[in-house]
Structure formats: structure tokens, C-alpha cells
Length: 372
Image 1 (tube, helix red, strand yellow):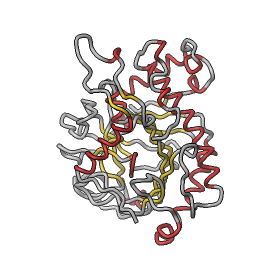
Image 2: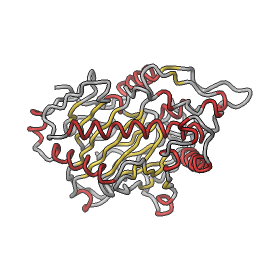
Image 3: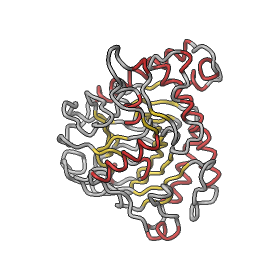
Image 4: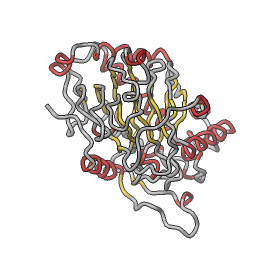
């Protein structure tokens, strides 16, 4: 799991009713085009009217529940090509993948994560998925032995576009939070190397569907991914088709260090189905909640098995976990601290923050992949 490892939810019931159509409709679809154009605040000029409009929509979503849909400017056929080449890797038997692919280790945070070797919620059985993690091809030498032909080139080209989207979204976040015009690179400037970012293929094979259990109604039954929050800055998740099963739950407080305590949370989980093509699900992480002094939230989510039809399908997702560069100082901007108050969190670096999160995860009993 490594740097994309997450914080589990503890301190309240994990089970809860599924969402209504109204809850699903509350997730906005935002046209990110104004920030993809080389104009306005992304090139050091005054924000355009379109950028102000998009920023307002992002702020509303991040304050409400931390989830939104967004076209990041990557053509749908390129996203599909990434899923197609990943499918070639995952459709092989488990023993072949374990033998031929480089195995994930905590030291490298790169490689193949075998089935049932990690669990984001220690109260549940291991997560029913396997995966493959890559890091920046410009900073690290990813061990891609055993991957399909063309995998290296496909990943490198896709990574470059995600780096651009990450920096552009950083500008959007600064504008959305009302930071002064001189500081609109407040987040974007800390994604220069992207040495803490990771991209992960997630593969969920066909599995059992047990009503009242694998659909999330039980607090202890195994799920495809147990309840957790991302602890990076933000996450872009591409989904192969609808890829049903992702659910999120609104929290009343975005406490970045105690986000596992969801007392007072809305008990209803709402569905976040994929839109396919180039539309990504975007969600905030706990680092961003801390960076914003909890103005924005890090929202709990999970992946359930909603019905027998979905259980019979292979499910694929491709999340990109955007984490600020190792040496980036995570310190709340004065604009986000109410007058007369002090920031909730002491300054730290991105690297130290992640190490703290990993230690908390280990202490909490979360299951990390076992090294070979």
C-alpha cells in the first residue's frame, strides 16, 4: 500500500444504509477546461471568469463532502488504453503474477500487490483486490519486469498528463480557498518533482455476493476495500466504465488528525459510480484537510459488492494519489486561520506527515502487503 495507504475509520459503526438518488446527484460534475487552458492564474495572470466559476464549484464540493467528477483533459481513448494494457497484466493466474512481476515492498513502494495481502480496515477480512503501483518515471526507476509490452511507455505518457492535471488542480484549489493572487501557486509549486505521488492499478476479481454482508450492511464482513480516508493531498480516480461499488460518507468535521473518529457523521453512504471515458472522480485527502486547517474535509469511502451482477464482474480502477513533494512544508495559509485563533496544526513536511500516517496505520492494525 505504501504512500497511498490510508487511515481507517474507527470509533463508530461502519455499516450504514446505502444512498438515495438525491445523494448521488449531489456530487457535482465540474468542467475543468478553464484551468486546462494556458491563461489566467495558471500562467501568472489574473484568474479568468471561467476559473473563478470552477473554483467556486470546487470549494462547495470540498466543504460539503470532498467528492466531485472532473474531466482532466485526458482523452477517453487514452484512459481506456491504460485499462486495456493493465487488464493484460491482471488476467494472468495469480501464481504467474507473483513469479513474474516485481513485488511491492515498503522500501520501494512500487510493484505488484498480491490478492488478499492488505486490509484498510482491521475489523474486516483482507481487501478483495490485487494491484500494481508505479511512481514517477522521471525520479525513480520503476521495476516493470513482467509487465505487458508497451506498459512502460503507456505509463510514462499517462503520468506526464497527470502531473499537469495535478498542478492545474493545485491552482484551482488555491483560488477556491480565496488565497491572495500572489499565492495562487500555494499548492501547485509543491508538485515540482511529484516524488511522493503514486499511481496504482486496482483489480477486483469476481467474488461472492452475500446480502447483508458484502454489501456493506455488516460492520465486520470483508469488502472489496474497507472503510478509510486517503491521507495524501487529493486523489484522481479513473474507473473502467461504471465500476459500481465505490461509496462515500459525509462527515461533519474534517479533523485531519482524527478523521478516523466519525461520530456525528451522516450514517448514509452515497454511491459514486464511474462515468467512464476521461472523467475522473476527484476526492480530497487528509493532508489537504490539515493544510486547509480543516476548512476542507477528507471524506470516508469504501468499495462494496452491491449485488450479484457486480460480484460476477472484474472491476478495474486507476487512482493517482497526489502527494506534495517530500520537502514541501505543509503549513496553513494565514487566510484560512480565523482572526484571533492559531492554526490547528503545527507545520510539518510532506515526508514527515506521510511517515506519521504510516506509523499510525501500523499501530491501528491495518494490514500492509507482506514483502516476498
